[in-house]
Length: 284
Ligand code: BG6
Image (cartoon, rainbow, N blue to C red; front, side, top):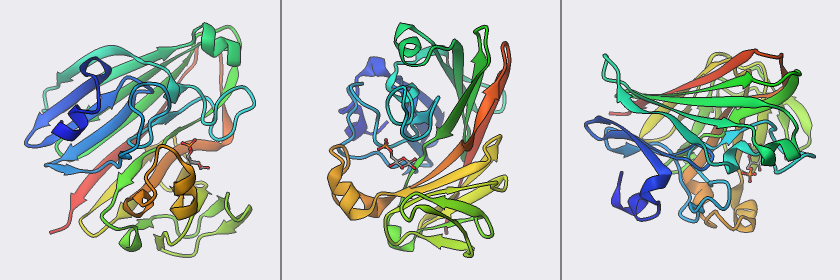
């Protein structure tokens, strides 16, 4: 972990996965939020300089987890409670035979979650770090005695040297709901550039999309995630966020793997898993 991040977090709040050669990930127990993923010394995730890391609010950057509701929620906070709860360590980071390091965090319902949303569940979030990829898998277990529905998403913030030359690929031909224009449209570009406030939910996505910037590309390989949200707040909205720098929209883009367009039903005793694998490719 670099010194700047180390100075912003408490040791007891984080878990570190380290595979050596400058490749590591740092996960905050608040929301099970991955804060940093360094691949051969290069930071891949965006974390706002103004992100609040004292567990008092959702973390602005990294990979916050959205559950059980994407977007505004009549029962509780926007994007649900999972990103605002302290998760426990289910299994400490350990090296597997092929050199991958893996760890799991867990969150179960409690009085607080049941007050907002009266269902019983256990979430297990597993991270697997290899030399060039980070896999994150969320397993939802219905531990109660009635079925429920939810939406979920991995809200990945990617760092880019320049949003002006950053594009997202793999979305051509897809229908998207545009939350800025308030409508449904079809994407006709292979390389989706982001020149203004973007907030789009692309539906029925292929199993892999990728973001590309001047230094590298990151593919987002999806398993059981039919949707991809592309979000950048741009300048006006950036200024309105207390935990986001006014100019930081120029160095980030969110490409979020989700199951959000229609609620997922989970029956009693059922377990459902949602996974993304992020794979970095450096440009020579
Ligand atoms: C995106 C949503 O996933 O998250 C946007 O599509 C939202 O509508 C953004 O503004 C950030 O949400 P929040 O709650 O972290 O400010």
